[in-house]
Amino acid sequence: MAQYKKKALVLGAGGFIGSHMVKRLRSEGYWVRGVDIKEPEYSSSEANEFVQGDLTDPLFVDKVVCYTGSTKNFYKKAPSKYWHAFDEIYQFAADMGGAGYIFTGDHDADVMHNSATINLNVLESVRKLNETLDAYEFEHHAKKQPKIFYSSSACIYPEHNQLDPENPDCREDTAYPAAPDSEYGWEKLFSERLYMAYNRNYGIPVRIARYHNIFGPEGTWDGGREKAPAAICRKVARVPESGGSIEVWGDGLQTRSFLFIEECIEATRRLMDSDFMGPVNIGSEQMVSINELVDTAAKVAGKVVRKVYQMNTPQGVRGRNSNNDLIREKLGWDYQQSLEEGIRQTYDWIVEQIILQDNS
Picture 1 (cartoon, rainbow, N blue to C red):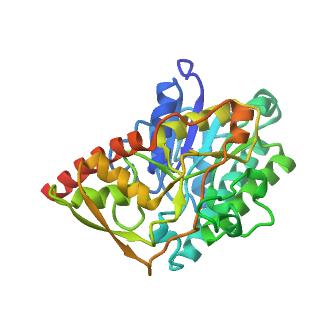
Picture 2: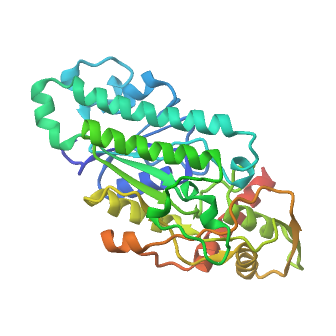
């Protein structure tokens, strides 16, 4: 392990943001264990070790949160003298999806149960690991116990702050009195408090970010769990070169901001390297309507696209935009890339996926 800068555990490493974080950490010289119930869908994991399993199983989590010095020891009950704490844990694992998954109400129980169980398991396993190390080991690793990053969501913000599509209020200090618009948002808010409670009571260092609509290549783009940028890029890509129409959920006047994946990863790494716990927004302040998002995808594609509005569809809040005042103050970070450039890269990648799918 001497040749590696640090050891990191990425939970949810088979997903969109998690797989990108693995790549970033490896590029920085980390040894990385990736864990997920599934492997990455669109490329091979770059983790040094990828372990497939269910994070709702507490016994499985007990195994993955400690580093035993060798892959061959992972499935064995190694003596505690061989246990070591990871330097950093990135917790992205969750039962989630876009509006078509989150806002129908059909998956509420699974979303809340699965995601909350994962977070409870992770924190309890880390707590037990810290307490199980013998006196010498605990003293040796006291300042190197895992720092845990938790990926929360802008969905925690009160629905009444997001009724006006032109003036949504998503400052961090507006989260309470709590009134999220979905069970997904309620679970994220509960888990924020859970991580902060384990920080207060057990001294586990945590970092919490509220992500605002992260998108980019290698994100889910079909199947029902995709988010708006990927869904719209897919629909526009299916429009003939001569032009055509796509379905738009709602009236298209609802507003959002969207942050490109590489900028999300950079902000997250800065948060982990800082002394600031959060919660803090990580997002773009380039607010656009869904109509404008469609227009941007059509411009990138060079197509004339007509919008057909579907009103009886899941839509979420009327307006949402990241407020980056706090992250600028605490971390000196702000987004740089335009929405159009991010959509261009995402659209080109989705076109490639459609070609592969159609030819398979």
